[in-house]
Length: 235
Image (cartoon, rainbow, N blue to C red; front, side, top):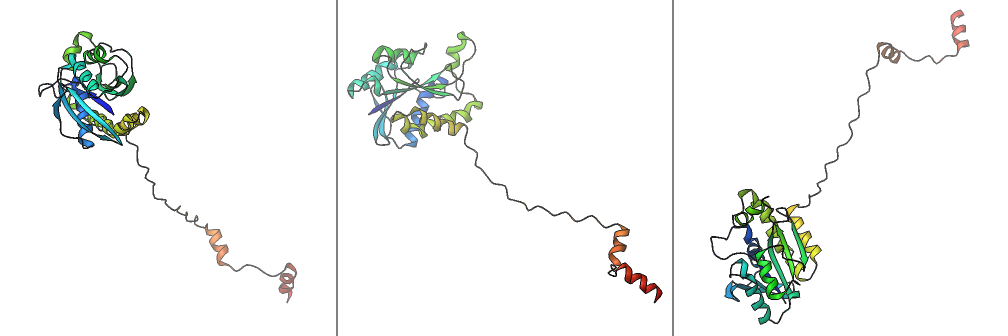
C-alpha cells in the first residue's frame, strides 16, 4: 500500500494557485483511475482506489501548507506504513514550468509543506517535484506561489497533470523512469510517421531531331556495295 500526498492549501481561494499543483495532480489521478469520492479524514481530503494491483490512498492535507506533516503522519500511523510508502507531489521553484523530477530523500529546500512533513515522518520519502519556475526575486516567492497559474500556463499544466495520471501505476511500482516517460509523452507527443506517396519518375521526351537528322531519317539507307554502285553507273 502507498500513500500519495498532494500539497496545497484548502478552499476555493487557493484552488488555482501555483502552490496547489500537488492537489491538482491528485485530483487528476483520482478522476482518471476511478478512485472513491473524496471524504474528510486524517485532517484532510481522503480517497482510495487501485493503481494496477496495489491499493493506494490519496491524501490532500487541509491543515494549510505549513502543517501538512500532521495529516501525513496521522494517516501513515493509522495504516502502519513507513516513510518508504509515502510519495509527495509538490510545487518546485527550482524547476522550470513543465519540468518534473522524482527524488527520494534529501532536504526540504525551504518548502514549508516539506519542512512540516520532515518534522513528522523524517526525510526518507519520495517526492514528485513539479516545476513552476521562479519569480527571479527571493522576496517575491511568497506572492508568486500564492497566485493562480497564468492563462499561458494552461497547456503545459494540463499535459503535466495528465502525464502524472498516465504514469501513476509505474510510480507505485517504483519505476520512476517510466513515470517520467509518461509525462514526457504528454508534453512532447511522438510524431506519427506518415509515409509520403511514391511518385513515378516522369520520363523526359527526347529532344526534337535536327532538320538534317529528320531528312536522313526520311531517306532510305544505302544497302549496295561500292562495287555495285560503280557498275550501275556504266550499265
